[in-house]
Length: 284
Image (cartoon, rainbow, N blue to C red; front, side, top):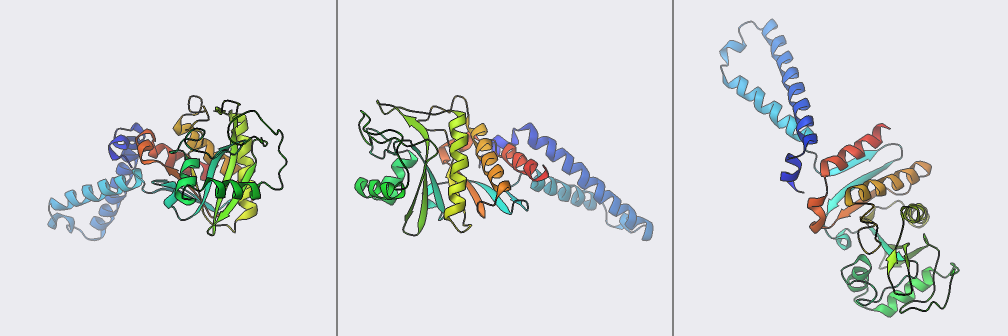
């Protein structure tokens, strides 16, 4: 996490000042009580006591104002939300993978190799496009395409946005959710409304398939969906958290939602603001 970025944040200094003065006040009250019952006791300890009090208050304020890790536990619903920086495919949890309504996976001419879909193909399926297509087809067996034989490269069947293909591969679930529309030129696009509906259906499928295990999800909407201009990264994180919390309050989804930030995006995220947002949901 970017420490210097958070230290430049007014939110940090406001919280730091509040906790610093509350700690100083509490310590001063304790010392006053001690001096009442043990007259002249404090006069013997000297100036180093004031340094100790200041150091304790300072460390307390830093700890309370600069939370690490970014996480929040909730009792209603019984779940945890955590924000981490790292590789989505190294989390040892079930994963969410955003896809188009045609569930294309071919790289690089249709899907970018560095996208989450591209990483699924190359990291999990070792580049075996046929196997991934087969697993997707099996997962979508109960779904009826809303359009077939589309004049485009790649997959030519279109499914309703929000369709989720839950693949179980090597005892791990990969929830492939369609939240973008792919046109005949293989250009993806989406809207906030489509994304909200897709997330609602995603959490329903996660609830149905897994046994409460943790689920890791990338920040949805940063790739080729075209949503980054209307849903910048900070808002995308809040949006993702809200959809999960609304679904969880209806019925518990899983033990933990782990939002994974790519290392290259870390400096764009205000971590303290995310923690405050998570905390505010606990109070609401």
